[in-house]
Image 1 (tube, rainbow, N blue to C red):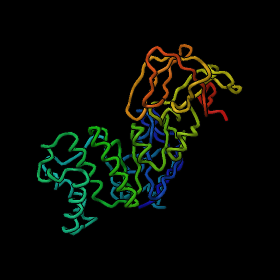
Image 2: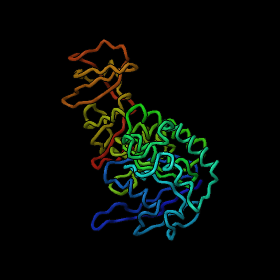
Image 3: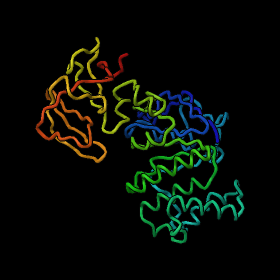
Image 4: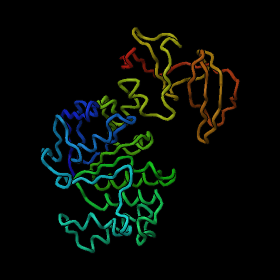
Length: 331
């Protein structure tokens, strides 16, 4: 496996800037997740590392080696695209075997059989190995696409929302399996997703991208507990952080225009009156949708709460974040 370094990467497509001076180190053996909305530059970053696109400025280094003049094959990366890409005329087994039969790898057949069997078991497609790719459902096709990357032992795995087309249970199962495979193998993995749960549960590091710029890079816990801006704070956390005018509770620092409160950082029993608009019982906890001075917010409370719609609850902030007019975090 290998460390990946992006140094001052910029990329434009016509007048559209996709990446602007992005510098980031993906440590050897890490699971790095890129977060951001559509157009933030996540997929373009993957394509810079893979060699499918070349930067206008900056350098990509893989394993300490300048990758500028290397083809995707020479970079020794395995990529899983958001839209599955299989050979339709081949069976599932043949699709999984295909990367291992390249002239570069020259993998013995016994080793190919072992790796294919292991990956098929993990991805729950062992019973489909002799089916043609065209006979699979969309979710099964994506599992085969993931499997084609996993059978290899590349320097870096690159994955672009690989679980987005799967049902909820399989997505949950594969989150655990992918993280386990990465941790046990020591693989370096760069992963794009919109799913905050995937980022929180799988990543060792998270990179938050906004309009082609890297705005924060750190552990999921660090970004959750110490975001640099409203934008970064809103990338992690479910339910999302509550952002309200800074003066809604009083006591805001100078220059603060907004207060940010995670749902668990709203204390009940004293403070300002809020009205319960909706109660969601989720088994292990209850979410309260509140109205405070015409502003909506969400907090969490005991699973067995007797609160109901229309009740009044006194609330106050705890561990609040404050932000200025530009959305930047205030100390």
